[in-house]
Length: 355
Image 1 (cartoon, one colour):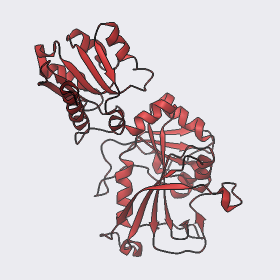
Image 2 (image 1 turned 30 degrees about the horizontal axis):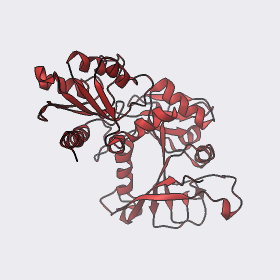
Image 3 (image 1 turned 45 degrees about the vertical axis):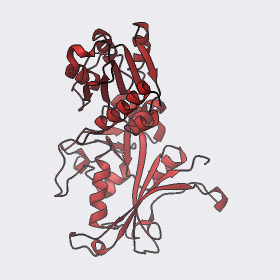
Image 4 (image 1 turned 135 degrees about the vertical axis):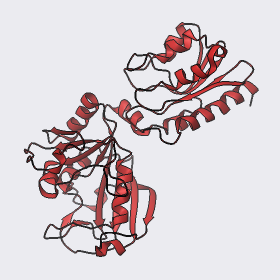
């Protein structure tokens, strides 16, 4: 490995590490890291984006480098932005600082901000992209997916018994899974910028759709709550309280709802906890990108299924999922419910591509 390339490779590894610094919000902005290298390879500046409204990674690194940024190489996990939002364009800031070369891992998929490398090249800056691109994309998978597909990434979460029931025949479902599983759900909710259910779930279960800490208190920053369906929402439903913002999308079309959330609300990752009818609609529309299933060691034999009719009449047409992660959730102190003594299993799956 040639020495200049080795230095840039090491700098990109460091930029990725910076971008993944603990405490950096997963949304609404991408996580980005930047390292500035002097011509002799010395690191003269580092920075990362701390969240919406704060200086971008390149700006923080330039500030740290000062005059030593002139003639330096900027190694950045994401293409420098080319638009003015809460802050100015990073591409222009790099040009004004006299940076000689810019090495980027991931090109910016956001149509509003793309084009930074072209602007830099036109100004005479040497540019290159693709170094550790896959590693950089793993920093912001949902953000990247949303901009490339024009809709948010969808995680469908459900809880089920061993025989696939999400509620008993009398409609009772409190609780299928254990307190440990329910707390784990809030950890996953906090990674998303949107909570989504249907109007029937709101009418029957009256969920609050908030993210809560281990003590059961709402976190200060909450995902957008979204209810899909044409039915009116009763004013006393908890989803309409003032803990978080709520949007009611009067449609039964999953793709239309998701495109609206991306286009009009800037949403990138939907955590979907709808009932079996809406779950079937999302699956048939091909807009479920990840499945999180909490499985409890109990049997009901009858009751509500986790998903409704998918129109599959033969085993050969079954929809296959690939298992990507498992987690065993051991019992912990709960609220006295017998389910809290159970060991639960969390499965994370992705739809098989050939399906």
